Length: 452
Image (cartoon, rainbow, N blue to C red):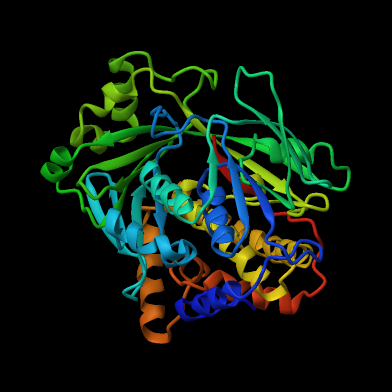
């Protein structure tokens, strides 16, 4: 079992500092290609560079330092102790830039219910805007020596030979490079998922959920006037769906309005302020009363969606693997999506420190992640029932009181608490599950979700 506590990670780093990364017996530092400069790609790229690898990251989108991007997924990332531990040496910067949240504030029928995540001081999240976190990870990766190629399209990749062919959009000249390892970290529609289509040994599926979301913002002045608890994730419940407000350090809230809006996916649900306001009055009246300009923000706002994917393999071919959304991810409302993406890289490098060879580490990593995917899938399914059907109800309030009473009396922790709010909770659950089922099948039957 890999120890991901602060002390354990320090020991792993010491081991890595003394290990030349080995690719199929070669003692020379390896050349690694990471496709995708999101959370998962930047984190694993930095980790491997710190361990001695020569890392190149390919990202098809422009450099955000030069071209501001409009990303419909730019809702906040929430990181509990699990995610903060996975961030490694970026953890302190995340804590400094983020907003600490310790529980939920649920608005239902004009009433406010407060609920804590748990009784421990570490039971909570740091809420941080996605662009801010990506900037921190990018800067840390460059400091570690990672080469970042933005605006670079990967045209073809070959998992059995390590060859990557790339070009800039509009440029017909291909650049062909050979790597000792290819890491696909480019989401459910990226090169990694395309490669899976041509691997007969891999079972892979993708299904999109009818539940969609719209993004709006409550500014700090409105939030202060309404008395919104800044130390809590705010929920506005109502018929047809829930709206989730995640606080920012500046006092504002990033809000996801979730539901089935009708119409074609590529078209905005609301083309007039009056239609948007009527929708909010029927569903989340208190949200409209707190921030009337939310209706205006919904006019022609693009909708986002959640897609479920499954895959039987994390290792693809002799010299390639999937991480993050390419293989498994969790929805933003579960509070663990960003953490799971970061944890993939941290887990792989920890396993690599034990095995000291990529080929052995790949097999061990895949076995570990298939078990982790099952555990996360079960946890997310349970959490979906809580948020989408039960939160704010009498049954939910009673269950929360009973859960805190059991925790206070017996120290009982839910699986959600153990995974999200404990630094090594998932690692311990994976180790326990693996010990019970040492010959678990390769197929991961857990539904995993990405926002598109």
